[in-house]
Image (cartoon, rainbow, N blue to C red; front, side, top):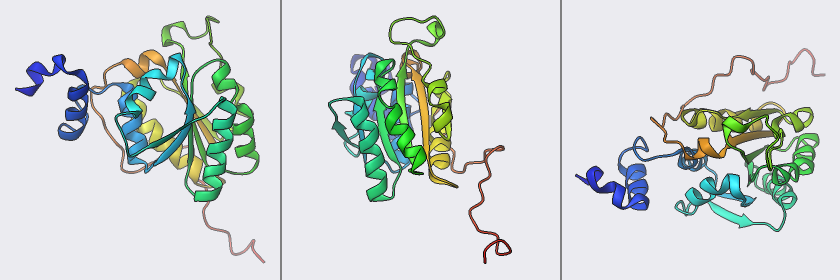
Length: 219
């Protein structure tokens, strides 16, 4: 069978698994991320590659349905995603690496928050077992953007990536729109996903935004 010889052709195995097996076989966290973005209807994103986000960028090149604009600095990616959202009405998406790459996004995230712009910012992160040890290019980006983001995720299980992406887009685009950050350690991007479970609906217990005005308060 194909699966017996798939290890000889890793790229073909990845493509065949996504096409015929629903991503349940040979899919890693990075591929799950890109597949989730595709299912969210993302057709373009902005970014600048670096060491801890390379698995996701490698997975992106195999999905021609999603365009990618390579910027010259990460700050541009944040502002371009914000501008894209303003013009298109869709959620803007940017993706950069950890450390200074992630901190360069901060102004763009803050601008999106103040202007109520739906945006999802994806950052790479150092290996999960080294979090909190102040190693090279580690920054607590989820803590740094907490005052001016709607929500943030630090993903530690690759099987949770589809749910996290689904929730992030829901939070960013509903209620008062705003930016949501997804921080994914490089080892989580490289780990194999046991099952790609895409949630058809979103039900977040602590997030029930009002989408209709109260007619008694509107005069």
